[in-house]
Image (cartoon, rainbow, N blue to C red; front, side, top):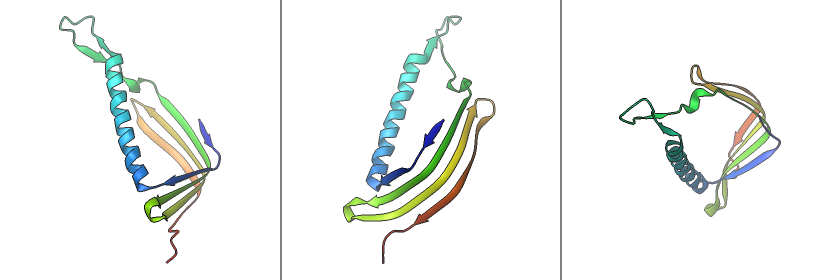
Amino acid sequence: AVNLRPLTVQWNPSTVIALQRFLGRLRKEAMAKFERDWIVPSASSSSRLAQVMDPDAVPTRVRVQVHHLVVTLNKEHQHRCLLRVTLSDMRALFEHDSRSGMTVEGSISDIGAWDTDSY
């Protein structure tokens, strides 16, 4: 379970790009490590074919509760805040298993988004 009290995130496009690149490299490295550590030679096969353990075999259940979340999208080089989004009392349940796939249930008490620039 993940339970977050008030959380504020300041975001800018450069951060989004850097985060996408970082997560892409992290995923690539994690998959390489998984293949390196979890590929087991088959004892019954004379050709030594590899079999991969199924990471989805174990059902997963994650409950998330966020009391208050504020996300702002900034353009730092222009000293501008493009967008501010707020969420209040968000609850979500994520369940995944290899047979039924993924299900998501949740609710949001209040959500708001606005342009903070004054024209």
